Image 1: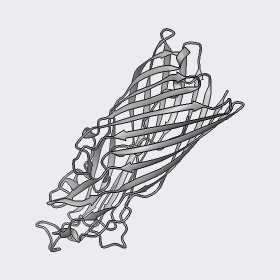
Image 2 (image 1 turned 135 degrees about the vertical axis):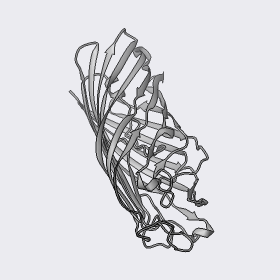
Image 3 (image 1 turned 180 degrees about the vertical axis):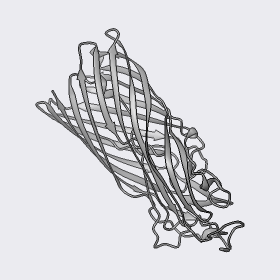
Image 4 (image 1 turned 90 degrees about the horizontal axis):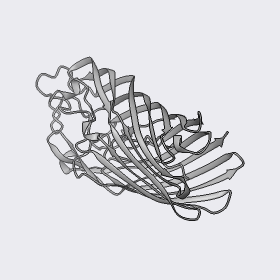
Length: 372
């Protein structure tokens, strides 16, 4: 009913849904999205007490998928998406302590899924996900010196050298498995899907005040569970929603040198808690060509310190969508506004280092689908 944009926990950008395999008939889709986050904070007084400015860059997303009915019981879908990402850029023109810090995380995934219809109401589905992930970061204030005095820390060979890390993209393989219950006469479907973690071994080069270090950084994209449902509640009216759990507490990016106490002394990126994201919406078909939807999403805050490379904690979001059907083509679009939860970050002994509040993100999406 709509092409939405995620602004969920961790570095997640898609919900990894495979419900396309339950669509009626053969189908191909192209999805495009654009997101404009506005995320800024103010540093604590010992760290200059200045504003960070907007530290999150705009980004684009792309997806493609095809679904094919092999026979009346077996269906196949192939889905391409970009499940994780980050684009951090603290302006170098400010006096903020993290000025000039940047970080990028890029990914893509190709998911192959089969659905088998056991009975008229019960189905099972499963498949494999082939995924690529890479990351890099530049953090000038991590330079082997005392952040208040500028004096070199003990044992530092090149004080003042900005920290840089480049983790080359690596591919990994995971799996998914699920079950669904359907009552087609009332458009009811309840589906439960488990997505496994996927391990990546990033060949990493770090440039630091302690010298250059080459190593391998293990990164596991988190396991997750999707509960997705829909049901007709009146003629041409559909209630839909989802509950998504993601195991973010097991995710971290910890390059070897950054773990040294004279540098970061902790993971470059990590999360203390898992996330659960709730979505509930209503779709309405107005006539044979036009339909619309409205949905609300909520992710509770966990209240812990956030990473300076991802300062957000929970959110509320409102999404509006519309679709137009013409012969075998369907065009749908959505706009989503997210109120990002307030949070605080820490840097070494400084806690809180910065308070981020009153932030938001605006996303628009477009999907073009063809039935064949």
